[in-house]
Image (cartoon, rainbow, N blue to C red; front, top):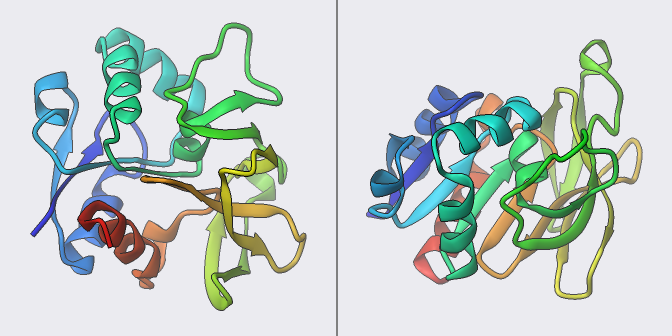
Length: 192
C-alpha cells in the first residue's frame, strides 16, 4: 500500500487524507522535509497559492520539494496545488514562486473570485465527473509534454493535466465522494 503525504501547511488537508484512504492509500500529513522524503507521493492541496508559497518558504520546503519533484517524486496538486506545480503563472503576485514541474502557464482565479465559486461537470479521460471549483485556476497554455486529461464542460477550459509523474486539477476532487482522481494518482505512484 503506497504511503502518500498531504502537504499540511494550509488548505484541504483532512479532505485529501480521507479521500486517499478511501482510494486505497495510507495517507499522512507532512510539513517537514524529513517527513516528505519518507512518502511515496505528495499531494499539494487546495487553499491559497500565495499562502502556500510563503509557508513553504517559512518551513524551508520550497527548494527541497522542487528538488524531490525534479528527481521524480509523484505529486498531485488540486486548485492551489495546480498553481504550485505550474512552471509559469499568468498573474502571480510580485515575486511569487512555485514548486514547478509541469510545463504550463496557469492563471490564478481564472473563473473569478470566491463568490464566483461553482460546481460543474468535467470530461475527464472521456468520462463525466462532477467538480467543485473554488477560486479555481485554469491552464492558459502548455507544452507538448503535458497531457490534457480534462476540460470543464461549461467553459471548455483545461482543468486537469498530467506530465509524467505529476497530476494537477483546477477543481477539488477531495470535496466530492468520487475517488477516480485520487485512484489515478495512486496508479501514477505505483507506476501503472
